[in-house]
Length: 94
Image 1 (tube, helix red, strand yellow):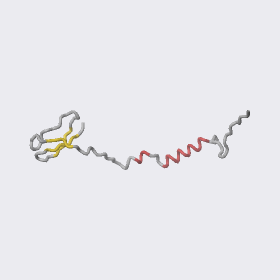
Image 2: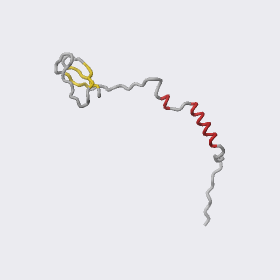
Image 3: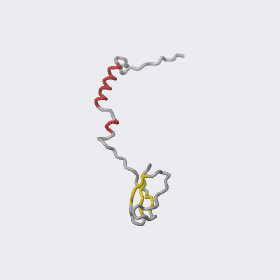
Image 4: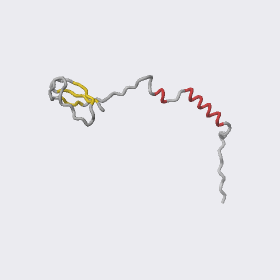
């Protein structure tokens, strides 16, 4: 359920109410009890990142990258093609 901001036109009192989206807007000010309250458009809730930073966990550490490269190099063995040589296609002769 969202929190709505209200302001009284009579006494300038400002308050928040936790209401359902389908609930009717409050009309009575809780301070002066007059029916001059209106819902105010708010800036919305802020987004707060807590901790040392979300980006630290989004990228792999250098030690992980080094061990992954070492595993990649040892697993390929001698199966890779020598550089400079390419496979040739058989030529068609008519």
